[in-house]
Image (cartoon, rainbow, N blue to C red):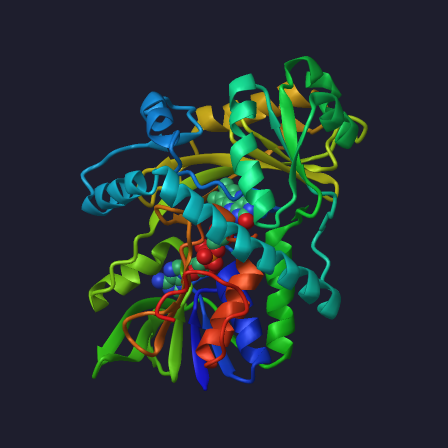
Length: 418
Ligand SMILES: Cc1cc2nc3c(=O)[nH]c(=O)nc-3n(C[C@H](O)[C@H](O)[C@H](O)COP(=O)(O)OP(=O)(O)OC[C@H]3O[C@@H](n4cnc5c(N)ncnc54)[C@H](O)[C@@H]3O)c2cc1C
């Protein structure tokens, strides 16, 4: 089959790779000049099966209310006159019950575990290098109550096969000695030794080069303007090239992998995808003092920040702002992140060379991605990966390619239309 993949972010690139491996002709279309130039550009770098507790959980409504309109809040809802945003918020609240949270955690852990294995297999098969580290993820707590509350979800994850161990503050410092500076504030941590980290952007671009060498065609600098339906199927896609020339693209089937922009293209077809952009920030800076810099990938529970060591760079990412498609940098948020980095690891990074970035996570209310068939038989979805698009990229791409090829996916997950 000729498959047209719309979007060359992490999800489009992994879909294209696995589709090609299963014998399809593949064309990837993207408006940027190079793959992974939007949300997959500078994320937190964590391949974190252990990060399976969605934003929507029983404690979330109270926290969100507390954070409303607090400029440097980790999760900020800026409510606007936008029906799509209100519909998303209502669905988010419905996902906050204990039952839905347990269900969503189970789905996220299963897909994450499968995806991490797929990533490891791909890495050794193709010899991919992307500043990966396999030293696990340490999630640390500076608040006793939050630490105590971490036990139940960690136990649920262990029961699902993700070995997220609860460890004391002293053990946390043994795992990551750079935390010694804040030992007095540490309440404890959880540690998942099998989790990993790495530069998602380098990974995606390296995989895209392999895919191209294997015959995948990349149509970059092409903006998709519409998906056209005829007789209950997608007939063609309309796009404009870099010079603004109009063109039609035809394939046997299409994969929608445009991240936060997927619902905008799906809407005219009558498909209401529950995806809303959640703006996040990242800061990247060179390591200044290696003795003070962290090696293990970390999650700071209080500030909802993740830390990855990408070679000789530190990457810190987090915060979420539901405020439409605006990607502006809010100076207060940037400063809050740098202040926290300096408080935790003083002198570790060169803050004078900090590079700031924002990206729009394609968030679904329960943090479950949409993977599989849509109502239109030749339109497949691989989108809505929210906070975990890097963690879930390989497992989602492989499952999508299997579904498109009429094969059963290898992992138990709520796939669409399967
Ligand atoms: C601050 C931050 C930190 C994060 N940290 C982590 C982490 O530590 N671990 C983790 O697992 N995940 C993390 N994520 C999430 C992860 O980065 C995303 O889920 C993932 O990048 C989404 O990939 P995607 O392919 O769906 O979207 P994108 O990367 O946005 O790709 C979509 C592509 O579609 C193209 N496109 C859009 N519209 C059009 C159009 N009309 N025509 C043509 N092309 C179009 C875009 O150019 C883009 O290349 C983080 C995200 C953010 C913002």
